[in-house]
Image 1 (cartoon, helix red, strand yellow):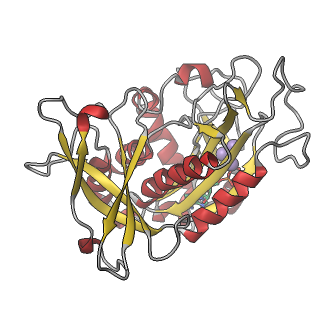
Image 2: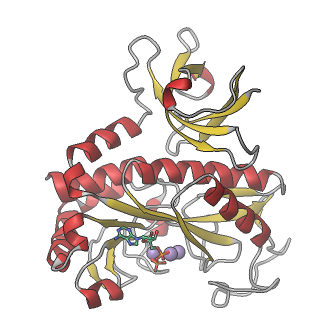
Length: 339
Ligand code: ADP
Ligand code: MN
Ligand code: MN
Ligand code: MN
């Protein structure tokens, strides 16, 4: 038997890293049952903006693996970190290493993350299902809609959900979004770096499955200008103290701490964020900070059920859909637990 191992990594493209992948055949093996069965591999960094042509090798260090829901058992998807091939130090594009370090420093706080990934299907140059000329009817009926005139791409969404569950991801749900052809899935609640690893794998599965339909998925923050919602990656966060009785005091303290470094967060929350965080379309402006219960126009929202129970979690509504979840998790732990 052979195992097909799909090695997945983030490239060095700026401002938004893209996913890259290639398949390694592991010969004479029935199944993979531990990480140390997976060899370090490499790639041509000069083709991914991670190296110069004269010194082009980058190393791929396996850090996590999942059952491959597309190829099926015993094949696997392998999350990797990009490293220097000589020293195995993290490459400058490797944001996971810092996330791991920050998360392990505060492991006693048991931080959990739930990330809501919004995205938009495209058919060529227009959103899937949109007319060739002009626009669909204005927003209003599409959010959580049902019916061929309300939502586009549900077959892909369902197949993607099944694939994420079969890969063992901590998948918590899906819904159709405010703009037609826009959807959301949620990962979590789970710790770091798992939440970020799983989000990147779920993104990879989304692109890969949509390929079979000739459809692309984009994480662009504002794929259509004008009176159309942008796409975000709301990040829900809690510590053990926030989840326990009396947690509300810790949640409010967390909101205040996030406010102290608001500009620093926004700077790292995705490209073209000013076009999405305008103060309209259920956002707070990128250059203002506010928090409140049930307030979808705030930077940070405390869900009503959390306020009612007096414990739970907070929702950072600012990250763009295209954000690097390793960076978001690292920054949230740093601002709330480290400083
Ligand atoms: P919204 O009402 O903002 O659309 P969603 O239901 O889409 O909310 O997403 C809520 C997210 O919060 C889910 O990903 C869920 O896993 C996550 N979540 C729930 N409880 C917690 C918690 N205690 N800590 C962190 N995340 C949580
Ligand atoms: Mn949601
Ligand atoms: Mn949403
Ligand atoms: Mn939300």
